[in-house]
Image 1 (cartoon, one colour):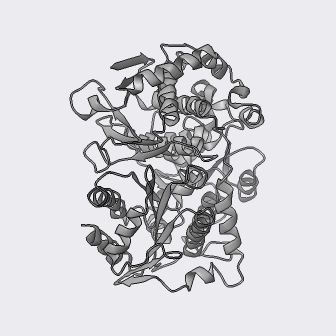
Image 2 (image 1 turned 90 degrees about the vertical axis):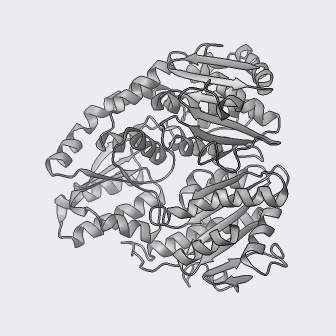
Length: 551
């Protein structure tokens, strides 16, 4: 059975048993008046407890129109940067807007350097290249945004830039009245106000995402036009692809299929899956419920097989073409701007179906508080964790595990297989790599290796996700701690060869990164999530050892 809903340049194709389930949910959504209520920004859609926050978080519905004013607001800083020959745009920040800007630039072929990390190796490499042509966009108020703004400011000064010449190389995009706005004015940076009623997860068409994309050369009016065409259908009951996708996601969760395998099949929309991952996981993963997105390298990647509780979503140009797309639970096709609005709307609808507040982040602050506590330690970062004896040492790799989680594991392969065996039925393994996303990109290859090993070891597939630290804290971190109690975690940290001091702070980037890793590890373990830390005493050699152990 197949159902196709198309409007506004988007096509959503639903196949198989999920058609009947999603149509039942869709009929209920229509009878409840959800399309009209959501388009009218009814904050009560998610219940009375969620209404006060929702009332301040629904501005994303109007962004296809309101964001058109950004061009005029950005004209001054853009002209100043252009006249100064600053054609290398570096975006620092964290969360949804950063991922949206990255997806927009990758899809359009525009050059944008993204730093949403505290890894000193990755940051140092960006600082060492093209500093004389660099213009920095600071998005939001995260610890990454503030820290990297400070690091770039000191680096500009050390290169010989002083006063206004250095200060005007920054454009801060943040809410009015925020600490980041005050810092921008005090330092003499350009400042552009972001929307007060849009949070980061739903801000793909807002200022924090579109400003850096526009500076990098993306025609953001094309994105807004694409979204606006879809917006015309959002009040409709049945010819509404966003509502259909939301019903499919919500019905899958209600049916116990709470893993959302996402694979690209020729969409040309680079980075969309990663952005959708943070949106769906952060919006739905709370109160012991949630949908866990599992982005894969492609339709041929290990883990694509549809088994048990897994639901597949294909991102493609032609959802009806032969091959794996025809077997998928859901196929989605359409341009990037419309996809941003589609997934935001669908996720908000799915959250209503699941009975969760899509805008609350009840568990995100726990890791931040744990990190802050470690940084306040008189002895530095987490001495009790740093100096604990590892359960296993193999070459450049040290393995740390609580209790008897890895009891009996004598080799690195044994340890990894024991961890895979600890994944419960209907559970998942999350790999969290606090490493250099650019220089150590090969770490991501551990995901398919672990998925393939898991399939051989357990005679069935189990979802394996991969996230860079600390990026994942702002993407899937809410789900990891607030979602279903069925996750197992493999955290990877690495030795720092050359550290980077943070001006105005009593710690370096390496110390901050380690505190973020330990802070999150503490929270995971405190919530009875099985978590193992692997530390690479030599990053290159250690990654090679891990790959060899899984080969």
